[in-house]
Image (tube, rainbow over all chains, first blue to last red; front, side, top):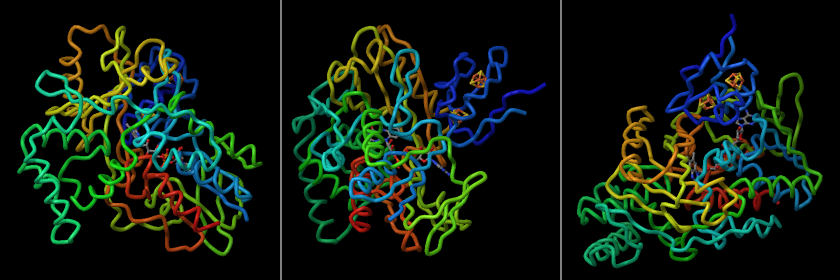
Length: 56
Length: 388
Ligand SMILES: Cc1cc2nc3c(=O)[nH]c(=O)nc-3n(C[C@H](O)[C@H](O)[C@H](O)COP(=O)(O)OP(=O)(O)OC[C@H]3O[C@@H](n4cnc5c(N)ncnc54)[C@H](O)[C@@H]3O)c2cc1C
Ligand code: SF4
Ligand code: SF4
């Protein structure tokens, strides 16, 4: 099954959290995904300035 | 003349707006789905959460950025902070004034200023601070943490001199009505009104130097007469396929955005917090209430490593300071590496030029000698005046 993965390169800027419409991301130093809430809509992927998010 | 700009951050947009006003053919390419980089905001739960900056322009409307915006014809209203600052020390708040610190420390500062100007020495600020009263030292530390996101050992006295003179000349900060987004959105409008283009979601994948340097994207490429890069020397080198040797370090930090039922700062200036990991805070909703559904407090803390432990320490301090207030933490945003507070630490800049005479670096990876976005404006001005 596909999942949203946060790479180690994440700096914690929270742009992904600010962009997610499903409240599926929390950030304190690094992004953490709530896979129950994530719909895999891919919006956060576009907002990450350093491309630290991938769906695998 | 065709100018291609990598990145629609403040540096790229300022340069693009200036050059488009002068009749240059400007195209800006931005990887993200919005323009503004670290100087705009995203509306989140009713708050204009900034993408980087604390919605503050270091020298307000009189400084280098305020001036450059007027010159470009970008209309942004900037509210000058009043009071400029206050300090929070030992549980007490007092307005920032000469009376806050012992006169002996002013004498030491002036002495150091003279010795530095005579080039007799330039002390590291941590060493200089050791001789000061504790309160004065902690103010210096908070000022550096708030203004540059660095620690005293990161800067030499020599680099304080221009900042000190600019503060005396232009004074303290200001808040743009509409927040930092009003500035960058205003610049996009100027560019578009001059038939320039800002392309979003168009990442530059490679840069090929030459008589007509070429930008390569996914699937296509374009040639220009001049390239300006808003992504710093290191990443620009990477696009060319070169390693940036001896690249100075970046500055790191974390910003907390907090919603409050009642104001905490209560004015439009900076509240410097002394003797803690967090350096200071502001409440920009006092300048423009549309920036938040309720009051919006922003707290900044410089980071050494950028570790979670440092951030948890900041959160503990915030809990203690806001004890008894009704508040909620809206966002915790940390910055380091290729997405830092500053691509090059204040005072270590290596200029706007690259080894190619038609490729320049603008933005906070190539600032002039001033604080943050006012330093960005000085760097941009240097480049565009050379090109025009
Ligand atoms: C927490 C924090 C607080 C701050 N507070 C203040 C403050 O209160 N006052 C102040 O004056 N300054 C402040 N700053 C600093 C200020 O935000 C920055 O100096 C300024 O925004 C930098 O602008 P820039 O144009 O250099 O870079 P950026 O805004 O980073 O712009 C670069 C742009 O290039 C894009 N990009 C990157 N790679 C590519 C590529 N390959 N192709 C296309 N596009 C690409 C990026 O997405 C980005 O949009 C703060 C910064 C932070 C992080
Ligand atoms: S993929 Fe969509 S739903 Fe999932 S975290 Fe990203 S923005 Fe939110
Ligand atoms: S946007 Fe990217 S770097 Fe920023 S917190 Fe999210 S995953 Fe990390």
